[in-house]
Length: 112
Image 1: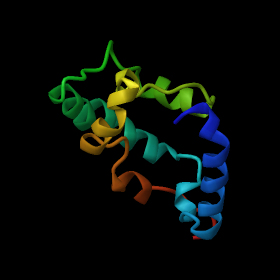
Image 2: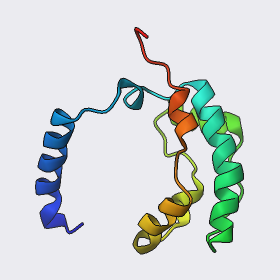
Image 3: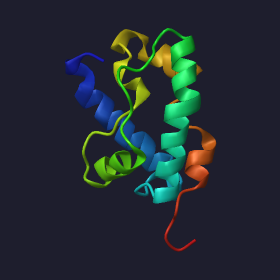
């Protein structure tokens, strides 16, 4: 989106989330089970999908241990989507989504 529209976008997004909040499982830090699941998905099915679409990830993914450590340290985590050009990103994630439903089903929600 153009920079001059970012303020309007943030305001609209805030109002939308206030009226229609997401389930608590979407707000929780990822637990180890989710991170292991996401790593397996990203390095397997998602990478195969992206490669079939002509977007093979560059280089090797980190180890699972580094992937989890990077997440816990709030460092940028590896994703096979990191190499998708901005103008192709939306089309590609519709074919090869960044997350699948099972990921959020593994979320830990306090009090539940």
